[in-house]
Length: 167
Image 1 (cartoon, rainbow, N blue to C red):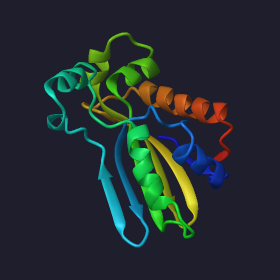
Image 2 (cartoon, helix red, strand yellow; image 1 turned 45 degrees about the vertical axis):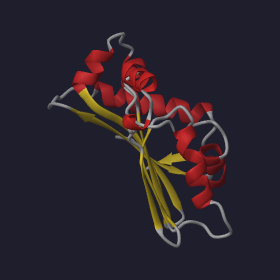
Image 3 (cartoon, rainbow, N blue to C red; image 1 turned 135 degrees about the horizontal axis):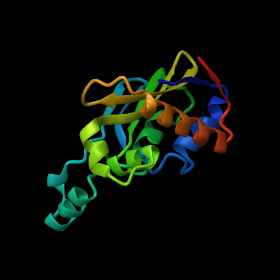
Image 4 (tube, rainbow, N blue to C red; image 1 turned 180 degrees about the vertical axis):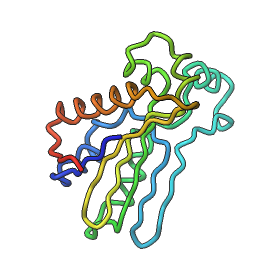
């Protein structure tokens, strides 16, 4: 697990809420506390869609909505003169994204081995934290997947010039 404190909150928030930096990430859940607490469940309700779209979602193993679809709602809640008291956004990779991280061509391997690869973004007490996590479906001593995920997040942040420090 990786825990990072984001030093330049304003720039990071611009990338998160205005830019397209995180748009491809599947969002599992979000919670924003301002004058109320707003909670968004990222699960895609396939029943909402017509049969053709349902088939496409199933074929592509879509579980969560991409951030780019949810971002406008979160931005409208967060935007304003007053900062939110807190917020939390949880991104979870899709099986094909996990395969890319692990450099394997077998998405079934990742789907059967891991529950999630997550990136948690939490703002509270004027501090922005990012943590990573990997959930296994069964016990293992192999910490390789966690290291691959942590390295991928660090590389991603460095490529975006995100200023952070380790916790």
